[in-house]
Amino acid sequence: MRVNTQKAKQVVLRYLHALKFASAAPDLLTWSNQAMKVKRKSDGTLVTGVDKKIDRILRSWILDEFPVDAICSEEGIQELDRDCWIFDPLDGTANFVNGRPQYALSIGYWSNNRPAFGIIVTPGLEEFAIISALKDYGIHIDGKKYKPQKPKTLMGGIDFRRTKRDISPEKFKNLLKYTAGEMRAIGSIAHGLTEVALGTLSFYIHSSPRIWDAAAGMALLRESKKVTNLKRIDLLKLASRKYRLPMFITAQNSKILAKLSAILIS
Image 1: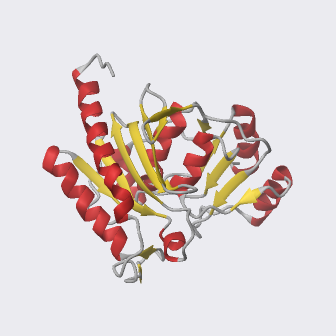
Image 2: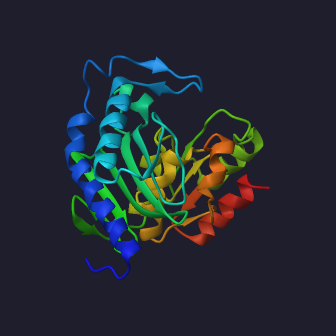
């Protein structure tokens, strides 16, 4: 792996450090007595002992090696900068609590307001998979280069957040007409973005994700050459928006994205 600038070298060092953590993460992403301590936060989402434990351990793992780095995570201190770690220790907590496999540890690092790398640790068919993407180096699954696929049929995922940004009933009806009923409720933003990146979903929509839900997945989308409706994000401005992004649409190609945008954004 050759890098040409000092800043790029620093990004690679962080990527390799995060991969080491990811290799041990499956042991943390398992049911335990700590997970039984389920609470509901003020925004209505769930949090467990696993969320908090991973947040604490990953934060320490980062700061032991890079003590001055900014970190923004769902369960910890939210310090955003243009160069910043952004992670969600357990995206899809409700799925996790109910025993559904659509959940993930999502680790992202952004450089100059853009995703530099993303790492998703999520249950696979037989064991956990580590899906990673570093800028200009493509996508890897468990260390092996992966060539993104194309869905065999039009199939989309959609999740809601029950806010003022939610999709109106009329727009939702039009969306269902477009997709001919091939819709899936994912319950994990990181998981949904990863599926588009890998090619198992044609598109994914969320009405108002928070940055830690999407930061790592956006790196995967870029490396797999998928398209999104969000072109530029200023991390420093997100705190005033409670860390929420606008409606997020990602798709396999510009044609699908344009159709979805015409239905949902007007």
